[in-house]
Image 1: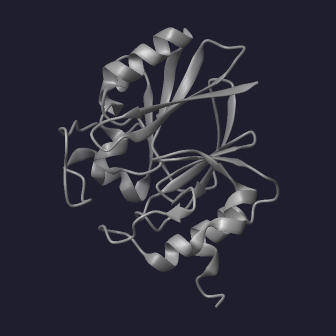
Image 2 (image 1 turned 60 degrees about the vertical axis):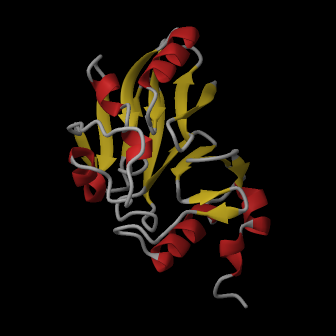
Length: 207
């Protein structure tokens, strides 16, 4: 069974998702924002070690603890278009709570099917919030970063952002057959069926 523990971290309260197969003692961490001690403590409480850090995008509030996890053996994954963000201050236009540069171990392009910590992970390139934003699908769960939120969607006015790409990416994710649980980059989780009815992005271009 797939288990997800979400921890709010950093000054912007980004969601860090600790995902594991309940039968195993390793995990992946999706979006290791700030507060590495908080993330490590949560993993200790679960009795798991981090095999990989999977970043949905490169903005500082989602990668601030990646270096700390890499230092204890985790591999860092990010889309190739956002890889440069991990070596300098986030181009999001602000930086709160420090910046910890980290060298990625793997650059993604979208379409990959990863097998890490016993998890089958499908990678979707979902640009719009940034050029290299991705969504990870694990079982019936989607981890989409700042692509969309409950009844809302991510900003597209940062470097590399695009409203049209964001809309295309949201349309693609919500067109996946089934009712996925959607774990967002900030705020509560939601689901495909709910967002198909209530996400305001669904109305753009239709009225």
